[in-house]
Length: 456
Ligand code: 4AD
Ligand code: MG
Image (cartoon, rainbow, N blue to C red):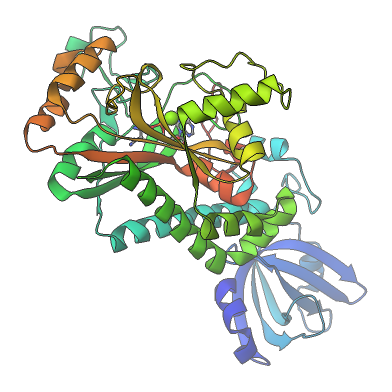
């Protein structure tokens, strides 16, 4: 029986026989009595197994079991209302399924996250990573559930593509040849791993109105930060007939809805992570659920930053704040952490610093973009209303040195009833960081890919 089921039903199982398979988490001896803590990973808390010399045939072997040995326990469940744990198992038979040897690197005491990163194939056996990856799995389900309930079609956009959707030149090339003669390559043209499923999502939004992608994306950004990975997962909804405001409303509603579910269903994991990460996640969740997100324009953000620098309230590494500049993460974090201490949408960025596909505003200087900045993470979401005018889009692509014939299929959508469309990209790892208080992206994805790091 899974421990999860045991924890759900223990009140009905008092004085009943149970059988469980699990790994040992600690083993303590007190004379003729032994105490095994076991866990099978299906539940955060361990179960205590009490074993006695006069009952257990292989008492000495069990007493010498190391951490992470696999055992099958048969015994009687007993409620222990006065103890820390609500019940324990009085063992009648302990079968050793597989021992673990002295090289097992995890110890009962806390080990540093840096050390655990070096053993990414084993770290999930700790309750810290158990909590993070259960939340990751559940969050993914809540996101699918949200879109499913709201009439969205799940589009599995391609992983190998012929375009760099963001035009940032950060894609990984996919090739079977040893030179760069891509016309002789597998696809007869240069191919790469996708940096975003947006362009394909736009095409499907023109058929289904509401679509979303949820898949891996790849960026060869050589930035070795705690918030960038070369392989990360992104959720990209795209909605036809939608504008920038509706786009932000969707993002806000999605976040509120999934955080509500997390709060109810994952409270054990949340409590553990609040303690270990020394952060009050409950307050963070209430902030998300109960309050409207702030919405300011890029121009207002620049104003806030300029005033802050002038009044010496803050000193940035880059203190020279000018309209037109790209906001650095220190600026983003100042706005959402110090000024608002809450999620903040920043909208209407200068067109020069945003991707070519964003809709030009009437001022001819800014585009209908929205980034969501959140405390502890910075940019969580990047989105926009899309340019729906064929000629404006083609001209803009030219300005960005994008070859027209590579994206003719994408431009052409504008000629077939493309009234409007908007969407956003939500970085899944950054979302998990925000909702767990984990400060390094390497700790929320199972086998992180970052520069000079691909052991697994
Ligand atoms: O802002 P980005 O680049 O937007 C796009 O890719 C658009 N095509 C989205 C759309 O409109 N459909 O990326 C979206 C989000 C970021 O806000 C960030 O959360 C995450 O993806 N992200 C990364 N996460 C981890 N590591 C990286 N290297 C990331 N780059 C972006
Ligand atoms: Mg962005």
